[in-house]
Amino acid sequence: MEQKYDKKKGSLLVSENVISSIVANAVAEIKGVSGLAKCKKSFLKALLRDENCGDIRVKFSGDVVELTLGIILKSGSRAVQVAEAIQTRVKEAVQEMTGLTVSRVNILISGIDYPA
Image (cartoon, rainbow, N blue to C red; front, top):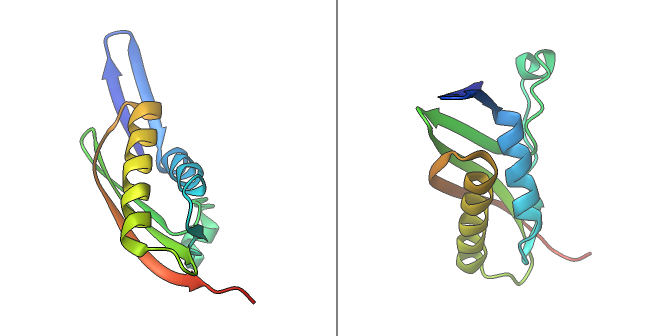
């Protein structure tokens, strides 16, 4: 899925994979995050080479984007503080790099990374 913008000088296409990549990089900057949750790929997604990074879902509604992402917390991290930091950083990064408006950033804590 791609989002197309028609501007006076031309058009801009932004794919879900680009947004997913921006999100993944933004999440990697947040202290307390071990990583993105692994995405369960269906046979169809593998066949179509859907390359979304981790468990990141992008939903377009016109020129507005809603994001849902699964994360793995580091042991000892405060879930609410980490989630708020992710929401702020992801929204800033996507809006700054694509010009899209981000309406929501939903965080799913999929696990905790305990030290071995």
